[in-house]
Image 1 (cartoon, rainbow, N blue to C red):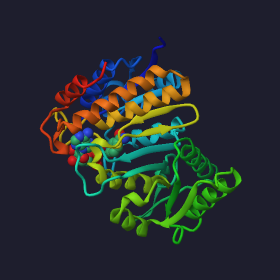
Image 2 (cartoon, helix red, strand yellow; image 1 turned 120 degrees about the vertical axis):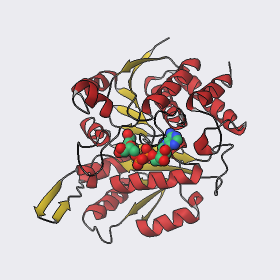
Image 3 (cartoon, rainbow, N blue to C red; image 1 turned 180 degrees about the vertical axis):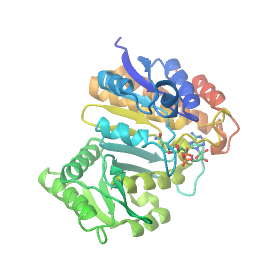
Length: 343
Ligand code: NAD
């Protein structure tokens, strides 16, 4: 049996807690993985003097895949976001975040089954900010045709492979005519030029789109968004299905992939043993399916299916962490899943 070497970045705050629970479940499910642990974030600043050590990047370049816990980024001042750096340095241009109802988690809407696809490398995350004069600052929103076309192409391919029916681009091209204007033009062109006209497509101005989303999220299928809108709408959509504890994510490029939950390091609950490890575990399930697809290792797909069945069963049985209205701690929840892994 092949064992896949995966870089594990535990991260900051609740990161090490949810990473430990996740790797325990993966091991119990027989996932053929070997962890190569490296650090990023505040943890790396303390041990290596920088938030994103070259060693961590090199390790991902060598193994191609990483599972990453959240990393803290100081607000207002201090170092550049590790996450933004990582996505840029490894050219992880597509963030994909599935948002689905889970059994045993009552929410306002049923049958939510959305995928948020976010352009991950440019927009306002270019981090180009200037002081023009005292009291006047600017932040530059960068859009390139190259990045706009490749994320659109990635989204249409994803839709086709997964049998999805429709892509909706949310934008503000009525105001940002050049940047968002180019984003929607590229999506439209890729659909026509690359032969994706069988997939329905529409464009919605994002403010009205947010209202439509909160009125009825089931009317949407795939949301294709530039960087900042994708960040904001991922968390908004998390609220439809139980919160940040249940939204997994993948950052995918042509060569490397980093799987991580949408949530952050949750400093308010770090060290208390109560964080929900499910979002990171679900990200690991996405990772196993990705390995199965790209390396043709069906044992990874089997482990993924067993873990998915186990968490669906645990949630149906009312075995939940506090963010979902239960009373289990991080490790107790992991044990409840392990008890439900079929043979
Ligand atoms: P957050 O996602 O860390 O927390 C928001 C709220 O959700 C908090 O109340 C938190 O307790 C709760 N929460 C989040 N994950 C949870 C889980 N697994 N189980 C239970 N409750 C959970 O967002 P924030 O507070 O805005 O950010 C904290 C730090 O995380 C910041 O430094 C931010 O930059 C960083 N961050 C990192 C990433 C990443 O590494 N990918 C993503 C988002 C935020």
